[in-house]
Image (cartoon, rainbow, N blue to C red):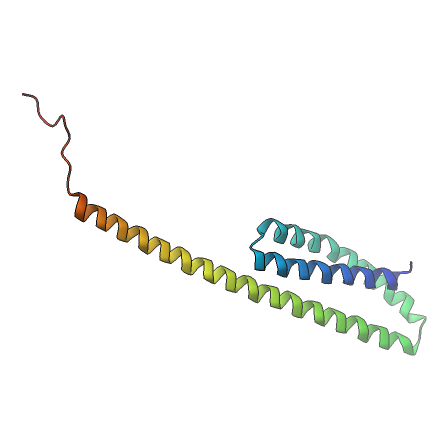
Length: 130
């Protein structure tokens, strides 16, 4: 397999991982999300290396070089859009979780107030010596 084919395969893997990230966020599967993000971090240097090697191959293609670079740029744009969508989705999940946390915090404070109001003060059984 030449560098151009390997680059295409690497971008396909990036797409697969980005789509898996999306499913993980929707399912609140944080361990899967973490695994996807780690895999993406590992693939990025490989893509940089393959891009340089593929560009060397494309130089030999002449006019087809510009077409291939345009295709790769379109793929990169699509992947950026996928990552933006995942970021937006993650932000929405985060905001929902923070709102729920605030709601639970208020409920806990209300329960403490109710407890103080209705429980009253209790005196210790050993409060005096007779």
